Amino acid sequence: MRNTTDLRQKVLQASLTLIEEGGLDRLSMREVARESGVSHQAPYYYFGDREAILAAIAGEGFSKLGQSFLSAIARAGSDPAKALEGIGRAYVGFALRHPAYFQAMFRADAVPLDRYPDVRKREDATFGQLVEEIGKVFADQPSAVSLTISIACWAMVHGLATLILEGTLARTVRIPRARQRQIANEVIGRFTSLFIKDRM
Figure (cartoon, one colour):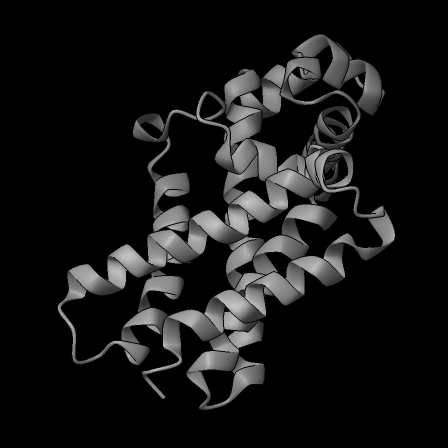
């Protein structure tokens, strides 16, 4: 049983490596077999097809991201402003540390969620953590307000992460790679303050 688990994890790790090196387009069952050092049929045995591999990566990624959100919330204690800022930093940090997970999770053509309800459930739970924390700050407002602000916050951190990962921040604004994470954290802090300055 352990050997089966180890081989499955080996296939997943090989898939992550391929995505990091060449994006989702690099991922194929043949390349996964070659990278993981198993027979050409082994990846099919554990996952069935390429889509199933991406679904497994995305599901695992949402779980990891959700855990990083929980850690940020715990560190903030009872301060909702710190919790929101921490979630934003955790999102960007996750994307930069795990670009392969990030692609599998958020590229629209990677995983059809209607066929993978477990991935959908994990994604909903992760986004729900952000909505819940926003709701604490805007408790006197309709739930639609919390949802709208949650989408705005998500768009901001996702945009930051994408600008860094794709090299656009370095190319267009000419910010050295060594300073990009710091700049991202400063933007998140200012953005959070703008949203909640009249709520605290």
